[in-house]
Amino acid sequence: MTEKKKNLSEFTPFKFNSEHKTRIGIVVSEWNSHITDSLLEGARSTLLEQGIPEGDIMVYRVPGSYELPSGADMLFRLSGVDAVICIGCIIQGDTRHFEFIAQAVAKGIMDTGLKHGKPAIFSVLTCDTMQQAEERSGGKHGNKGVEGAVSCLKMLELQDRLSNEVTF
Image (cartoon, rainbow, N blue to C red):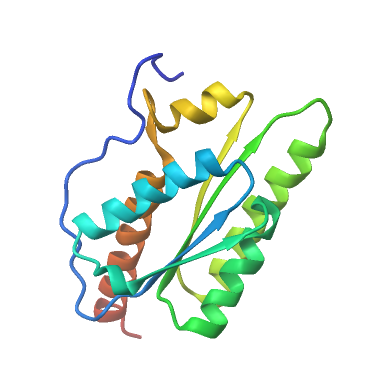
C-alpha cells in the first residue's frame, strides 16, 4: 500500500540519451481539463528538462479519455512521432461507466503502441475522487504527467539500445 504522503512521481535521476532526433506526441483529454492541464505541464517540463526541444513536442487535445487511443493512432500514422504520451483523468461516478472507460482506454493505448511498434504511454489517472486526482496531478502524491514523460524516454532509450544490440 502507498504511504499517505509519498510522492509517487519520484524517480532516479537520469539524462535522456538518443542518437537521433526524437519527436514526441502528447494527446490530452479535454475532460477534467484543470487536472489534465497540470499533467500536461508535468510531462512537458520533464521532456524539456531532458533535452527534448519544444519544437519536437507536439500537443493535441481530444474530447475525453476514451478518444486517447484514437488520437495516439492518428499521431503515429500522420505525424511521424517516435512516441506518444496519452494524458487523461477518469473519475469514478455512480455507475459502472468508469470501469468500461478505464479498461477500454488502457487496452486501447496498449494496443496502439503494439500496433505501431512504438511507445504509447498510459498517463491516465483513474481515481475515486477529484481530491485524489488533484493529489496526483501536482499535489502531495506527485504528477502522473512527469511519470509518463519519464516512462516515455526510458522506453525510447530501450528501443534505441535494442535496435543497436539485437541481431539475428
